[in-house]
Amino acid sequence: MTKKYNCIIIDDEAFAIRLLSELISNIPYLHISKTYDDPLKALSELSLWNEVDILFLDIDMPELSGIQLASKLSNNVKNIVFTTAYPQYALEAFGVYATDYLLKPIEAVRFIESVNNIVGKYDNALPAEQESNLVFIKGDLKGKYIRLNPDEIILIYTNEHYLQIVTHSKEYRTNETLKNIMLKLKNDTRFIRIHQSNAINIEQIILVEGNTVLLKNNWKVPISEHYKKDFMSLINKKLLNPR
Picture (cartoon, rainbow, N blue to C red):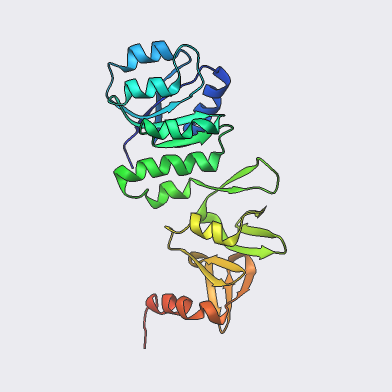
């Protein structure tokens, strides 16, 4: 993806602008064109623009609310994403054709999902390299999010009440479910479940022997009968000399 999507932030709190700017800065295909802490000034300037891809807009602001501002800028902005601490405005927000409604404090994963849904309308799907840089998991502590590169993932497996994600350099523990992780990786065909309690990166396979897969870093994992047919079908497609 080479296109940069222009973003505007309007929020009367400097702290909120800074946090949102940090979230945006972590996404390589987004660019902050300008930020405003005064909704009236934003209205006077943005009324002359028509190149705003995403407007991140607070609702509860003095003199001019985000709802009022959105209705006046709807022809100048392609996507409006409300960012607010108040869930009760959601109905009004979608009444002015908001694309999304993010509740503060905004979770990094929720923010990425929102942006990807918007960008997906224009690009159909993010390229694998970009997706690889945008995989986050919930950590074992509240409010903790860990960014992972799927290229480095060897194995994902359940361990009692937690999920373990094994990479070449480290092992991470998360309270995510295996099902949710696989949904996050659904567009990455390298990842496949081979057992009720584990999934692997097929690029990390060294050897398949019977009902066991040997992975890099000496990890051995079982293949269950339920998943074996699909797994072996994948292996057979990659055989150099099938007979």
